[in-house]
Length: 65
Image (cartoon, rainbow, N blue to C red; front, side):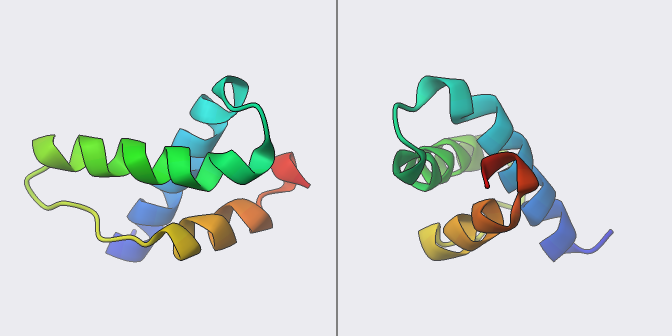
């Protein structure tokens, strides 16, 4: 698994986990971004991911279409 695959998988996990808390789907990328940045404080190698990339990943997920 490459680093990019690892980050994509983490984004997908966080999106599924945080989906019940959001009131509208457009809020989800920002919520996932905030959670990943918060988790980065505990990671040895922080994930570098943009909100746009998170939005693109969530857009490809069949759960949210």
